Structure formats: structure tokens, C-alpha cells
Amino acid sequence: MQLSQFIFAQLPASPTQLQEKYPLRSLPEGAAVTRFAPSPTGFMHMGNVLGALVSRTLASQSGGVFYLRLEDTDKKREVENGAAAILDGLNALEITLDEGVNNKGDYSSYMQSQRREIYHAFAKQLVEGGLAYPCFCTAEQLEQMRNEQEVAGVNKGYYGQWAKCRCLPEDEQITRLQAGESYTLRLRSPGDATRKVIINDLIRGKLELPEYDMDVVLLKAEGMPTYHFAHVVDDHLMRTTHVVRGDEWLATLPLHVQLFGLLKFKPPKYAHIAPLMKTDTETGGKRKLSKRKDPEAAVSYFTALGYPAAALREYLLTLLNSNFEEWRRANPAEPLSAFPFSLKKMSSSGALFDLQKLDDVSKTVISRMTAQEVYAQALAWAQQYDEELAALLARDAEYAMAMFAIDRGGKKPRKDIARWSQVREAYAYFYEEPTGYASEIAQNYAEIYVHGDEKEAWFARIKANCGDVAVKDYCAAVRVAVTGRENSPDLWAVMQVLGEQRVITRLSQKL
Image (cartoon, rainbow, N blue to C red):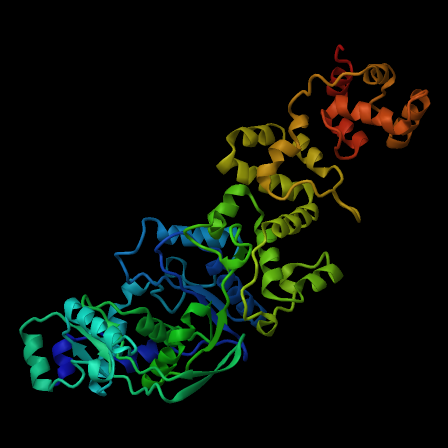
């Protein structure tokens, strides 16, 4: 009886049957099939969402498909609501999915934990071809091996003379399997580290890397696959054409290409993104945006502050393509989907994540919104994060939209907020009576104020009444009395929204 039959029970489908079950997609020529394949092991990192945005864009621009696959085989590291956090992160940037949510799509399941028998079918094929074998080494034995390698000053890993189970006779392997010994399934790598493999990365260009010669684990002791093996099988069966991921995977890229070759799969095109960077306040230099140190590493940080999805996407595009800002200046009203995104315009070095620049971008994005859009998005944010503000906005939607409409539209719209959490402070005087700002000028103006004046008549009345006081100073005194601020949107428009009673009351405060 063959070794593979001792390792694998009867499987429901063979590799050939699986190829038929997941056929080539019927898509236009050149259409990209991309995926976002995170592990539900923590919060959604901005670096993750950067890759998701690139993948979504590639699929959209080519008439392709973008899907979500959860790489959830490591149950020990999985966190509660990890999958929900991933979906929340995508929603925060309004990155839509074509497939994957609740197994929507013809290539399900999109959860690796539910695809165990698929991986076993291809693992069995490798065993039958002499390209995989059971390894019975214990954790203690592997640790001792690593210590010996460190003393010898050689590369650490399971390879060559250190691959103790690689050449075990088949009868011994079967005997130990029958005895119930714990084992992992390892690749019998044909790689030679003295040879080079040439791979074209869509961002970094031609790469010459050493062949991978390690006998890596394909299936863990409990039968679940490692990332290396699972993603190769899944990307082939789901017919992925482009894999966008972080450059931390460059070291194992030769292994992945090798696995595609051994399984006789056509490899996808790879694009490895550099990590997001930030300025280190201690050293003044640049370092990677850290999950542990930096709250802004989490997408939820920006959601809680109320950055609009469009602003986050627009800012990330300034980091992704060097020509985006030039395009935006030339096309201020065009949707982001009109931007000709290109992987070739991406840098192989890490982009600096600048919160001040994000604010500037977000102010511009919000300034382009209609009053109705601002109202809807501010209300939606407030309903989750600021119940008091939500109640104020919902109490009189017409009043709130009139408030948001001031200085909106035109060639130079006002840019007073960068995020919805700033709405309460920026527009507080529309809901709260400013006190302690009375002046003789304000009281004088209260006597001649006519709420029905059009703007030109309103200003003419001020000029006719200011006497020896400069018009600028007169208007400033009125502004402070009405709003409690030295700076505000167009004063006439503010007074029209506040209404006659509020305006008269504020102007007439006792000294």
C-alpha cells in the first residue's frame, strides 16, 4: 500500500475533480482577479488596507474580480470578532467586494479552515510524486537542531543534512504512522541555494533571488496547511491573476514560485508593497508604522475620529502613485475611479504616513461635498460615536443642512473641518448661545438690524451705521457677538441660518 494512503483517508475530490469544480473564470482579456487575504488575528492595519485598495483598484480598472479570503488556519492566534474587524476596516474605506462575504461567489469556501480536504488532495498528489514526506521530529529535536546550526554558523532551517526525516525508508514511515506518531508533512524541496531564480515583481522589476532549499512544513500536525501551501492552492483554484502583499513576503517568494511549479500551476503576478513609515519622535528618523506603538496603525483609529472614507482613499492614493496629486489638481471634480492608477508608479521604498497631510486632503474632500452629503455622513458618524451631536443634527435636519451649506460650493469653498469629530466644535455656536461677548457696537446694530435684508442691503446698512468705526472693526464686533468667535463663515449667511430671534438675542446681550 502506498505511503499516501496511510497519511490521507479517502478524500471527496481528486486534484483533477477540483480543477473542474473551479474552472477558469469567464472574464474579458486582461481582467485582473485579485484578493485580500488577511488572517483574523488582530485589528485591521493601515498597511493591510493599503494592499486591499491596490487590489480593488486593479480589479475595477480591468473589469476583473476582487474577493476576500480569510486565512484562518491558525486558530490559536485568531481573536474574537477578528473577521468582523476586517470587514469594518474595508467598510471604513468603502472598499467593496465582488466575492467572499458569506461565501458569496462560485469559488467558495473563502475561509481556509473550511477547505482542509482541498489542501489534502494536493498534498496527497505531492506525496505520490515523491515531493512531500512525513516528518516525525519533535519540537525538542527541532530546537536542538537550531542550536547546533547556530554553533556551526550555518543557515537555520530544515534542509540538507539537517533534514533528518527526508530519507527515511517508506516501510519505516508506514510503521511509525501505524504506531500513531505525531508528524507534519514537509516539502521535499528540489531547490539549491547556490542557484538563482529570476522573478519579475510588478513594483520592483526583475528580481534575482536564491532558490529555496528548505523542506518547509506544508501540513501541520493537526492537518491544517501553512500559509505557504494554502495560498498557492487557493490562488490557483480561485484563479487569482495578481497577488498584492507586503514586502515581508519577498524572502519566501522563491518558495511560493517553487510550489506553483511543483504543483504544475501557473503562478500569479506578484506585487510587493513597501511598509508604511512614520517619523520617529525620539530619533527624528523614519521607522515602520507599528501595530504595537502607533494607534494610527489601526484603521479603527481613523473611523473613530470620523475621517470620511473618500478622504482616506484619496490620501492613500497620494502615497501609492507619485503622479496622483498632479492628476487631482488637473481634475478636481473627477471621481477617484477616473484616476489611471499604475503599479509602475509605486515606490519600492516605504511611504511616510503624515497625519497633517491627511488632514489637508480630508478638508479638501469634505469641502467638495454637498451639504446633504456632509449632513448624512456627520450624522452617521455621530450616531455611533457622539450621541449628543447626533440628537442635535437629527432634531432639525433642514436647519443642520442650511448650516453645512454656508460657504459650500463655488471655486473656493470653506475648509473648516477634516473629520466628523470636529463638527461639534466647528458649529457649536449654531446650537449654543455665546455669552459674554456683548459690545456697544453690537447693541447699536441690534436696533437697526433687518433680518430680511439681502446681502448687499445688509452690508450697506452696516456701512451707513458704523460712523467713526472702521467697517472691518464694526463687522468684527457683530461677528463676535453673534458667534462668539473672531473667525466664522460668511457672517450674513450665518445670521440667516440662525434666524432673526437668535441674532437679536445675541446682539442685545446686556453689558
